[in-house]
Length: 562
Image (cartoon, rainbow, N blue to C red):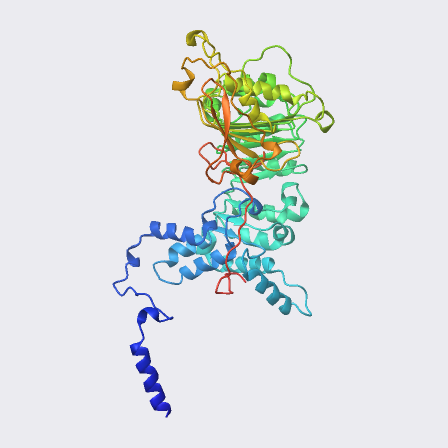
C-alpha cells in the first residue's frame, strides 16, 4: 500500500503546472566559469563593496570614521570571499589587514544573540570583553604571519579598548612596520608614564606614522621629533604646550611632508612664529592651518606668512576660532592675501557691534566654503539690536556686492540670515546699468543657518536672478520680493516639512523670492563641526559625519575575531 501511495503522489507531481509550484527554482548558469578573468584591480573594487571600511584611509579615530552597515559582519563576509578561490586569497587577505577596525558591538540583529551567548559563557566567571579578546587574537595573528603584519596601515580601536589594553596594543604595533595611523590612548598625547612602552615601540617600529597630537605635559615627547622620528607626519596637533618658539620652528623644519597644522590654547604664541630668522628653519607651507584660542596672533602675522609665494599657493583651508587679534574688520586683508584659499572658517563671540565706518567687503575669487559663525553672549541675545546683527549685515553687503563669486556653501549662526537676502536693497528698475553699482550674486549658493540654541542646520538654496529678466525695463512699481519666509517659525509640508527646506530665486529686480521645495533630494540637515576638517577632499577639507545604520539579520552567526 505504501508503494502504490508513492506512485500516485509522483503522478500528481508530473501533472502539476510548474508555474503554480510553490517551490520554483530559477535557471542556473551552467557555462564556463568567468570569474578567473577578473584581474586584481576589479576584484579589489568588488571587495570594497562587500566590506566598505577596508577602503577607509582617513586619519580619523574610530568614533568619527564609522561607515554604514555592520563592520563586523562585513569583515566576516570578506574573510569568506578569501576562501572561495586561490586567486582571490592574496587580494582579499591583503584588504582584510590593510585597514583594521575592532568594534565593540554588531550594528545588526546578531548583537542580541551575541550578548546572550556571552552572558551564558560568563555565568559564574568574570564578564567576557569581546573587544579585548579580538585585540589579543589579532595580536597573535600578526605576530605569527609577517605577510599580514606588513599589510597593516590603519588600526582603529574603540576608546575603552585602547585605554585598558595598552600592553596588547604595544605588542601589536611592534610587528607592523608599515603602520600609518593607530588609535592611541589619551595618555599617549600627554606624556603619561603608563604609555612609555607603547611610545617606544611606535617610535622604533613604525616610522611611517602620519598623524600625531601633543598636549599639555608632552613637551619632552615633542622634542623626540628632533631625533628624526616620524618624518612622514602630515597632520600635527599642538595644544596647551609650553615650548620655545625656536624649538617649535626646528621641530616643524624636521617634517618635510607636513600639510596640516593645528595650534590651540597657546597664550605665549604670537606673530613671531611666522617671522624669518637666521639659523632657524622657515615656517612650512601648509594646506590646512588652524589657530584656536590664541589671542596674540594677529591678522598681520597671517598676512606676512601669506606674503611668501610658496605658502600662498599651498594654503587651501584656514580655520580661526576665538582669536582676539584677528577681528572681522581686518578679515578682508587675509582673504586678499590668500589667493588660493578654498575654505575659511571663522568662529568668534562678539560683545560690541561693528563701527559705522564703511568696511571693504570680504573679497575672494577662490573661496568656495565659508563658515561665518558669529555669536553673541546669552546676556546680549535678547537685546533690541544684538552685536552680531552688524556682522551679519556686513556679510550680506559682501554677498550683494558680488565680492565672493566662487562661493558655493555658507554656514551662518543666524536663523534669519536667508531672509536678510530677500530684504537687501534692490537695484532701481529704471536705472542706467553702466552707472549702477552691481547688486546680487550670480552663483548658486547653499546657505546653512541655525540659531544659538539649535542643533541642526536649516538648508536654503539661493538661485541667482535671471540676467535677461533683471535687465528688463518695465513698469512695475514694487521692487520688493512678492513674498518672504521665516524658516524658524515652522512651515507647512509643501515647504519641506521637518527638514525646513526652501529655495530662494531671483525676482527679476535684483531681489530674491522664497519658493517651496518640490523634490526630496536628501540635502544634509547638519554640517561638520569646527574640528571635523580633514585633508581628503578636493578642497583639502572634509567634514566628518558620525553615522551608523542597522542591517538585516545575517544567516551566519560567526565573525572573524569572535
